[in-house]
Length: 155
Image: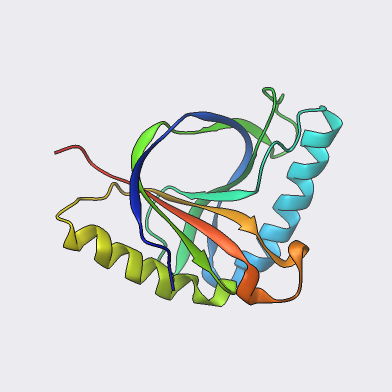
């Protein structure tokens, strides 16, 4: 289900983001609109995108999500509409890659969190997913790749 997780140090990365809180069932509709708005703003400012889209969750998802949808950028973006400059943080993170359809992400996160806890590590309240390969890369969902990142608390 997931690759063997690793503990790595992430470097800060400048991004362009849209932040929102949304009920779980509205996520697909809201995400599509945010992606289109982000790509338009980033492209208009000749800032990228400079890597795959990601979602940064400010808290563990429940029946709603408090998150940023974003893209890495080559240079800082000016705010426009809902688009704001942002940054993925420098942090010590547990990281793995899940391969498969998005519907399997919940199970992948469960497996990943069990690995973190079994190692005696404590995770921070945030997490992010980078969508390395998705529907734009082909219809075979078995080839899609989502990088899972969970910041860890220092002991």
